[in-house]
Length: 105
Image (cartoon, rainbow, N blue to C red; front, side, top):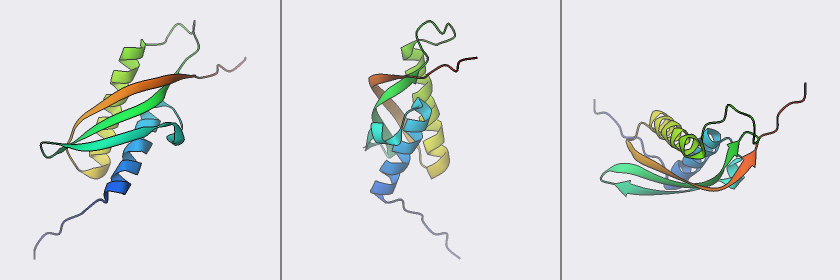
């Protein structure tokens, strides 16, 4: 018996990458766009999206560059996990900020 091959349509891969990136950045899918290219047989993903940030003065917020690096790493890991494909890199370009509201106690 010969093992089969799974193929993921480019549109489905793009949609999945958008969903993964939007989740990692804490924003809506409609606000996120991705471009996927080949990087020596692996995926290279470029994301353009706003990023969810806590209100100014929240105190516990990591810097923007740390937040973007963490989101890129999360998206890379999750996309590889869901597709079984090698993801060489995920580059994130922040196009804005979405301030998350604090709950009033």
